[in-house]
Image 1 (tube, rainbow, N blue to C red):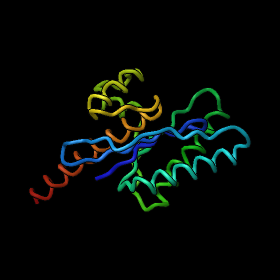
Image 2 (cartoon, helix red, strand yellow):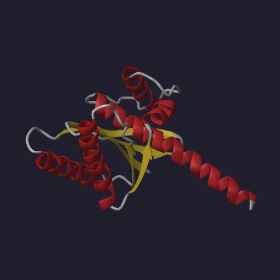
Image 3 (cartoon, rainbow, N blue to C red):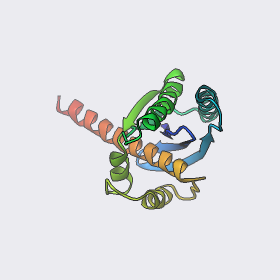
Length: 167
């Protein structure tokens, strides 16, 4: 299965694509999409067009997006939510199922600790995806989101098999 992980951001949206074969993970690609400056609508359009091109180029079969946390800046949170909407819309429009994960769940799945630092996340991404060189922290986070989804999808598959065998 090919998974795209997406770390939503208005200025910089991180993405990472991995292949999953059983318990083996393989890095495919990663990057950061920059929205540029200007009107919000134009920036959202830039995110939409560039993420659509990434999905068309790498043909993932599933998508995972990090959930947004609410902070003290209401306007900033609202803008991040709009970028997150693009991050969920584009894969859904491509016919992909879109899973959502809280930041702490991603860190726990990848690092083993729910409050890990960004450097720890990137270090563990590099260990789990040998040869991977994330282009920046947002791309490393996106790869971590994809790894998290692979872990949960495998667990769900094993659970479904166990329930089916017990029936």
